Every structure is written in C-alpha cells, then in structure tokens.
Amino acid sequence: MDDMPDISDLASQAQQQGGQDEIDLDKQNREAIMKKAQELGRLISQTAEFGYLSSAQQELDDDREATEKLNRLKKVQEKVVNTVEGGEEPDEELLEEREELAQELQRDRKYQSLVSAQSNFDKLMKKVNRAISKGLKKGEDSDIIMPS
Image (cartoon, rainbow, N blue to C red):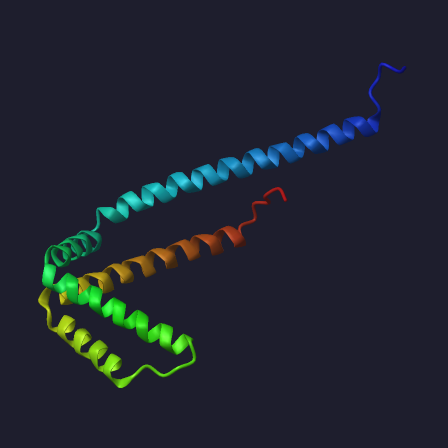
C-alpha cells in the first residue's frame, strides 16, 4: 500500500502541472503578441504616413542650418525648463531667444514638412491604438474563460 501515491500528492502534482500549463500558455501568448507587434510595426513602416515622416526627418537632418537651429532651440528650451523647475523665472532674454528660434523654424519649409508628417503619423497611430483598445474590449467581453 506504501507504493501507492497519496491522493494529496496527486492533487498537488496536478495543481503544479496546471500552474505550469498556465505559465506555458502565458508564455505562448506573450510570444504571439510580440510576433503580432513586429508584424504591426512592419505594416506601419509601409504606410504613406511613415514614409512621409521618414523622408521629412531625413530632409531636415540633411539641412545643417535647420538642424543647428533645432538643436539651439532644444538647448534654450532645456534651460527654460531647468530654470522653472529650479523655482525661478527664466529671464526675458532667454524667452525671447526661444521665441525667435521657434519662429525661424516654423518658417522653414523642411521643418513645416516634418511637423505636418509627424501630425499625420500621430493620427494613424491614434487609429491603431483605438483598434487595439477595441480588441482589448472584445477580449474582455468574451465568454471564453482564461485560466487565472
């Protein structure tokens, strides 16, 4: 009789196996999600919006003068933020420099193209996020019971 496994041992083993099955299923789901995410990324990279954004970014990157202005604007903006975060008011000269640089960039055709392309790409990504949210909602409302 000692050779027979105890019923509590069998139950424990079954529970452990069930837990392992859940872990395996979760791992499989995560892997499938990552595959789908890569495929989604590949498809997004083939959209006109992504193509326009990449081209506009490259055009701006190739324009040394515009890139220098953008970099100066980023540095000035960083100084403004650091000053404010330090509890002080940025001086008028710094704010004027930021405004001038921003206006110069906004008049630049390549910068305008980048801003427009980024806006269109952002719209696409919002649509993608809404579609993902709908899928999550459908999954949440599903009658399929997933192991917990």
